[in-house]
Length: 108
Image (cartoon, rainbow, N blue to C red; front, top):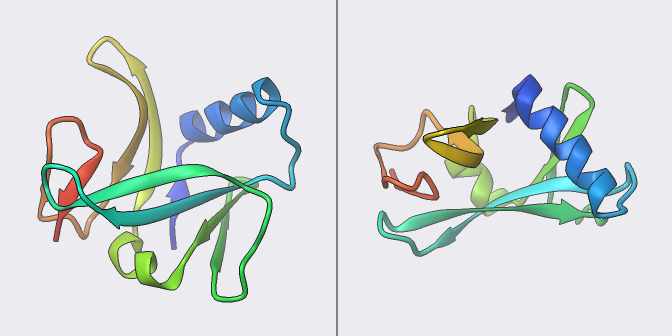
């Protein structure tokens, strides 16, 4: 399962409206090679659900994950911070053994 905090949900809803997207645009989370720790998170809107996607729903937000990325993301919580020490989406990933300072890359 992948979950979202209340702050992340609020920001996702606001971004949908700002970008003129509707509820059919779900959140796609994936993992790609790269970054200073070896793996990077990728987050975006997607209005297509692929046959091999795993679909999770938390707090009314649908999250799409491809099978390859799912191994790295199980149990992850998507949060949003707008504080002085950083602004943006953050991944709280129990599978990550190390993360970089920016929080956008990790290793297992």
